[in-house]
Length: 370
Image (cartoon, rainbow, N blue to C red; front, side, top):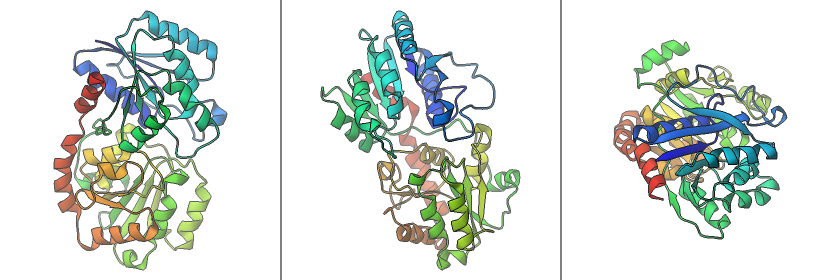
């Protein structure tokens, strides 16, 4: 089968780009011919809150990435639509995650009426909504023949928007297995320059208000946790006001117990943070699903998530970690149980079994069957 994926890929960084590339490799491994169409311009600089949109490292030699799409130029959308149409693909998969791209994707898809058009929906509605999120998504939804969502909560959002009741399916976010091997904790700690005398909680990824880092800081400040040799690692670029978190850390007297690496973590360093961690904490205030959980699964690390969106679909409470109420007290109690009762080995054993559910083959089968 001849397949195209439209969405972020190298030279862009981030979870959606990593996902598109890994899915392309899965299709290729199954014998399909795959082209990935990505952006010459993804976000205008004034709309991008981070330091850079671009990844470091070499162009992936095993992928055919065609960089030709401008997210804000309608004439370009029509040109790319004709380009993709003329290649006569059997299937075009659109990696969708925010309303900003709905017009671009929707115009391109309207040139592909003789091709199966599947939306792979990471998020249908964003965590931080604006007026455009009520106007733009229906334009994209109307141009699709089917939808694959990565969580039931996202699938429900799609169902509310799809008035034509096109085919839909849910397939959980597969495991990110391309960040390197599981390695001894001591090796990772040495690479990061951290002491093995402490145990480490990891908050990983871009820092945004909805991800609840402030809740985690408040939970960590609880006297019951402070008696243990625990440190918190915050590894990720701040897309929110960094100063308010620093003030909170200092206000609670946690300055010596919180390690902040305020940068986008390159792919080749991700393994060190997860291998070093005792538990990965995602105290989100809202969510759909998260790639962070699937990195944690790969490295077989216990997780704490809040039961918002689809997070508790992926992290069975009491089995591979904790799925708790989205509130500080519940986060504190779960962390206290983990460290007081030394749950790491118990959870890690169950993770090694549970992770088998989240294969890329499962996702590719769902897409092809749809």
